[in-house]
Image 1 (cartoon, rainbow, N blue to C red):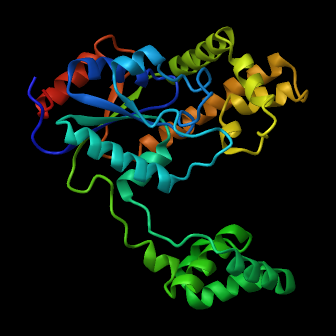
Image 2: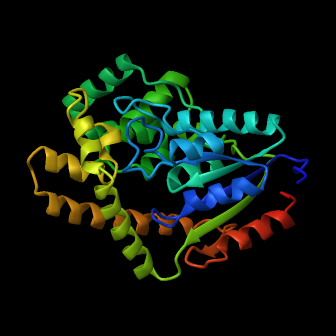
Length: 314
């Protein structure tokens, strides 16, 4: 098959449990594609069962990027993700292939498409000064300070949101520019890239709910509790780490800490996963360019394959 001559990217988005990973592998077996994971939990090592990572054998056969690149005790920002994706895409294009971005972290897809502003690193001295002012005069007064230098930011940041008030003031003090001005200068990671988007989901929400429940119970049978236990017993992780706030891990962590029974944790995890899927679908509906595909159809892979072939991917 002849690879496309211009830089392209395929986005395969969908709620958890829709079957994105398996479909991506099938596409990459037939087309000149390499997979980039768009999943905020799959970046962490040792979190395999609960994140439904592709197996090591699959990853050895089909190139996957941005999996197992962080220890669970480490953070991973949206900015770091975008930088990693851009490097991965350049690497893939250099081999005459195209990136297939697959996952359900919709905030990542949004940031890749719209871009993020280049903002300065946090400055502890500036933050301490803002905190001291808030301690003396109250956050309402600090919010008023923000309104004087950046009325746009003050209008959209609630007076009871000290973290964002602090950040907006910090940026102004460090750069002399408002955060509103800086956020206007965003460059999409897909600038000058031909992008084809697919949204994969069952047409009936009940079907997705059934799949989510079945998948979580299969994870338990595959050793999910033992996986979380090994993380729990490391001693350097807590329920506050971003990695341990992932759906499923958070609920089983509470069980291991003695705050719930296993059946209760299971019910909570399934309910939380369904809520996550609902939020993912809400984000997806905002993607005007996405072509919706029914994940329950047996010919969905062929339908997407044909669409990509027509788009010059084969």
